[in-house]
Amino acid sequence: MLGDSKLGPEQARRFLPSRFNVAGEAIDASGQACRSLACPFCHLAIPRSVLEIEPLFLSVLGAPASGKSFYLSSLTWTLRNLLPHTFRVSFTDADPGYNRALNASEESLFLNAQGDQLTPLGGLIRKTELQGELYSTVLSGGHVVNYVRPSLFIVRPQAGHRMAHETGSLTRSIALYDNAGEHFEPGQDTSTQPVTRHLAHSRALFFLYDPTQDPRFRVAEKGGRPAAGGRFGRQETILNEAAARIRKHTQLRPTDQIDRPLLVLLSKCDTWLHRVRAAGFDAPYLHSPGDPVPGLDQDAILRVSESLRTMLLDVGPEVVAAAEEFSSDVIYFPVSALGSKLETDPKTGLTSIRPTSIEPQGVAVPMLYALARTVPGLVSRLGRRPRPADQPSAGQRSGATARA
Image (cartoon, rainbow, N blue to C red):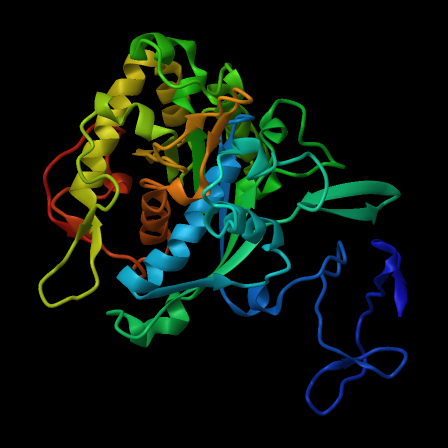
């Protein structure tokens, strides 16, 4: 039964069920059992896990060419290996169809059949476009509306986790949203392009900031590695626009801060990490007595965050100001999606890498921290300092004992 009023003639027809078989499956007008679900408003398909498991919405934002696609691919690939092996938490696709593009990017980076060949970065992952397979088109009220399609994952405690007996309460369906950087520019979110409305529902926001796009940082570095494409530009405007949209859709006052974690991820840290004190940033883990599963070393994470904040105050104070005006809970992380083995192809002059040389650094730590903050007990936090949510402001720390 093809032909849907909102999705077009080639899509399966949606219907409100009134008949069911003995297994509880809906029966359509032709007498066939229907096992798929759709939203009654937009008619887009909804994986059953999204309805049956408590959702956790997370959003990644950043300027064009800041490296979000590379970061997300390195992040999800790392989590698939790190979470089960180290933290006894499974991390699986909730719906492979929704994750098709991200899975293809993971394969291009980490399972590349031509991994020893020098490949331009643009040949590994395509830039996130303003339309295409990452978006769903719906006819609504006589208008064509484009919705961004999230990547969907399920996280749950496994055997050996100290809270394995609480699997039901700790399992989450993660909806991870990634947009083209242009969508965060002023005027790009409209009634027919509501592509960043997920920001208002996200429990934690990841802002990817590329220091190498700032000429002041280049001067401080005295000639660091060029940013891909040689792009320069202001990035704090993305944060200001995101804050304005969240306030608009949550009815906050212009002076109100967002009461959720804002994780500022400073990318390409392999080129500039020598500027800060960041020992152990890639694996800030601690073991408590008798627990084989580590927790996050909260003290180490906050020390690195303070060091990064100090660096930013020297070369880009407006970024710190925008972040801490945006949220009452800001923390800074160094990340490198590809590692330090980038080369300039002598034949083309393009920034390139051999896929077998990719070594992500620190990419999983922000997500582990976000999970520890939003799903208490799934990932533990260990340390002497109070949690950032208990701090009066960013950069102000005091001693105390805390464990989440």
